[in-house]
Image (tube, rainbow, N blue to C red; front, side):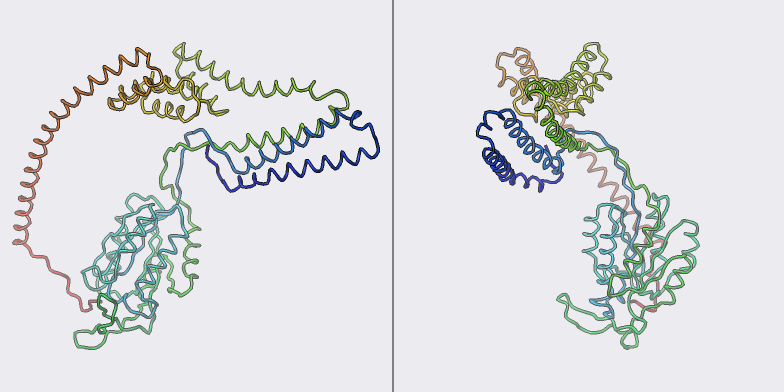
Length: 520
C-alpha cells in the first residue's frame, strides 16, 4: 500500500490522548450520575454499555478519517496519459559581442538565466536550443526532458561557435527545420544584441512565411553599448576587443534591427530587464496560446482508495447516532446480526466475482473471466484474483501480462498457494524463452512443496534445455564474432572510400569562410 500524503498519518499519535479524554469524560458523567441515584449502576447497565460502545465508535471514526486523509492507494489500472504543452526553441546569440557587461554579469549569462526562468514557468512543455553566431547550430533538439535541456544550457559558453560575426537569418531557417514535427503554435524566443554582421534576414523570413511561428525577441544590452572584454581561463581581464584599425570596439544593442524583425514576424520585442517583468510578460503571452498535444501514452497507475476508509467513517458515525435509539427498545446485541450481514455481503461481493470468473475460465470464455477478475480487483485486491488473471493471460499466450499478475499476487503476505504461483511463473518464463529464470522459479516452488512431481519433472527438462542452450550460445557467439569481424572490415572499407571521395571533392572545390567586416 502507498499513501498519497504520509504526513497525515502523524495525527494517529493523538489517538491515545483521544481515548484517555473519552474515558475521563465517561468516568466524570458516571460519577455525577451516582450522586443522584445510589442504584444507578444496577439500573443503567445497558446504557453504560451503549455509552462505552459509542466512544469506541468515535475512536474508530477518527482513525479511519486520518487514513482517508492520508490517501491510501493499492491495485493498478491502465490509464491513457496525454501531455499538452508548448513547443519552444530558444535562439541564443553566441557571438563575442554577448560578452559585453552592460547587463550583469554579462549579456550571455544574463540570457541563460532568463531562459532557465522561462523553462521553470512553463512545465509540461518541450524545449530546444539553437546557438548562432556566423552560422546557427542545433545544440539541443526539442525535448520534454527539462534536466537534459538544462545540462546542455550549463555547458554553453560565449564565443564557443567558431564562425565569427552574427547571422540572424541562419537561426530563422534552422528553427523551421527543428519544427518539422510540430503542427501548430511554434514558438521561438530569441536572445541577441541584434548586431547582424551578415546574412539576408528578408530572404529567411520569406521562406518561413505562413508557418505560424511566433517570435519573442529579447534585446540584450544597451543602446549606448560597452566594450567587449577578452579574459583568460581564470576570468582575469586581458584587454578589450579591437577592430582592424586598433580602436576599441563598442558593442551596442541594435534595437532597430530587432524591432524590424519583430514587426515582420508579427512578434514581440522586449528589452531584457534586471527584474523578471520581461519574462512574466512573455510567459503570459505564451499561455494565451493554445497548448499542443505533445505525446500520448498508456501507464499503469495505482488506484486511489480513500473513499473506503471515508465510507467507514460515515458508517461509524451512523451507528453512533442510532445506538441511543436502539437502546430504548432492545439491546444492541439484537442488531449485531444486521451489522454482520452487511460486512459479510461486502466480502461476498468480491468472492462472487472470483467464482464467476472461475466458471467462465472453465468454459474457456477467457474474455469474460478477465472481466470478472478485474471487477473483483476494483473492489478489493486479492491474490487469488491476480493469480487467476495471470492464468487467463498465460492461456492466451500473453506471457508478459501473465508475469505481471503473478508477481502482484506474490506481493501479498501469508499466501497459502505460493508454490502454485512460483510453478506458473516458471512455466511462463520457460514459454518466454527465459530458461534460467524458469529454473529459479521451479526451485522456489519445490522448496515450498518438495513432493511436487510436475515441478521436479519440469525442472529436469529446463536444466537440460539450459545446458543445450549454453552450447548453442557459444556456437552463436563464435558466429556473431565472425560476422562482426566481417562488418568491421566492410565499415573500414566504406570509411576509406568516403575519405577518398572527400579528398576528390576538396580538389574540385575548396570551401571558403564568408568574408565579414566584423567578427563580433
